[in-house]
Image 1 (cartoon, rainbow, N blue to C red):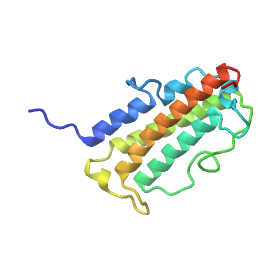
Image 2: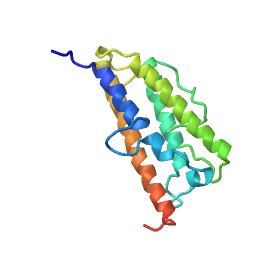
Image 3: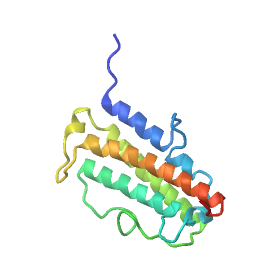
Length: 165
């Protein structure tokens, strides 16, 4: 009889599918931003809405935040000033946009490494100073990637139609 696959192994697989690996649900987070220009990344459906660039930095921040909690690291080491939504400029160069994409990928890799170092037992542990168990945080960041991938796909569709819903 085959042994059960470790829960952490399953979470890593889901983590990868939500971010960059092939999956049945459609476009993942990396796929949703692949090939976008800076001009596309800063477009907003309306002035109160978030741009794709806003979402990319927001996702990078929450990957950082979860990793920091898992490892017990201090706050304040995210490469950009601020938290959650960063109020990016309405115009970016392609170099700046690629820098935000690189930031997202770096934060993803660092969080993935932190999750891969966990044991199944760790998933039920609540990090020091936290309110939620580690497994809850990891499942949350997976869902967060998928939610924002869908949001980005919607923004791209609106942009393609000239903002008309």
